[in-house]
Length: 390
Image 1 (spheres, rainbow, N blue to C red):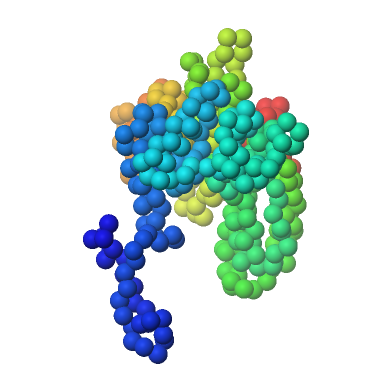
Image 2 (cartoon, one colour):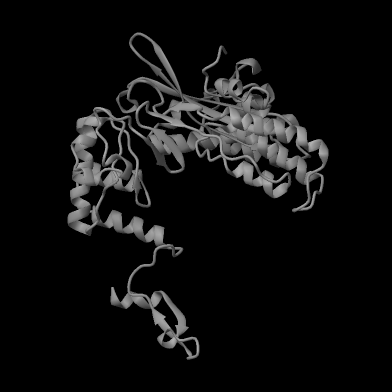
């Protein structure tokens, strides 16, 4: 609106001539890349669907990240209907074209014009050609096998702190699929920083062996796959399910990992949801305190899963191998030190003591991220995803 144009003004040379004086200009349209631009785009999308069907409004409000939408539905009919109605409302109410469609179901993509499909899908013959990988918020999604796939990035980087940091950041893993590996790099980086090595200096020689081991482990990730679906059945159709969250801690790291447990008619199915791992504080923390931090990390995962998957907090169970921390959580009478009481209170805010149980260390999958193994990173990831013999 014209009265809003003065909110974004800038100075520039009159008539674009550096020899003339600076004058004040104001933008007539929203600028791509401006700090509030993502919020403006989100508001515009939500405003356009204010009068749409409930499922369309919920789709735009919950499943869009700026201008990208991601959703999984139990049938192709529901997916086609929702996408077609969302397209129409955005076009009619906001002159917004929803396109670049991609799906692991060929019949869904056949329902839309070729020009509405993702760029690398427009010229394909779906009956004969293999479906290409798609980039989904930094993850590679293989449409043909419906898995997330990782590829090892270039590792020829300087043997220095900037090179080490660059290598760590080359692994993009927002859901914690690779947490046992990612946290091992952070542990190595902390050791380097603790030695007081200057920013551009070459690292001491004794770091060369762990650095090479980390690079070798990075190479093992090339082609590593994680199923997109939690379990083989559609999550939205499940009637009897639970979420199990395991937490653990060591002097090196803190971790928590969540799984979906579904009771089917003839079997019990389990699938990885998400995980998270952090480097433990340098000093001043006992193992029970670190385990307590792991329990809080488990609560953070539970809150995230409950909010985004519409799961009641009571449907979540927590497991850990520290009987001391379980004693903290189940104790309602004793007064603890402030550090402990604050974290126990946070745990009690979202869970009840009877939701917490003990699990032996050798059966705790979160242990894989607190003592990561670079010798066989695939084996550690298999335990993390509960695909191994444990």
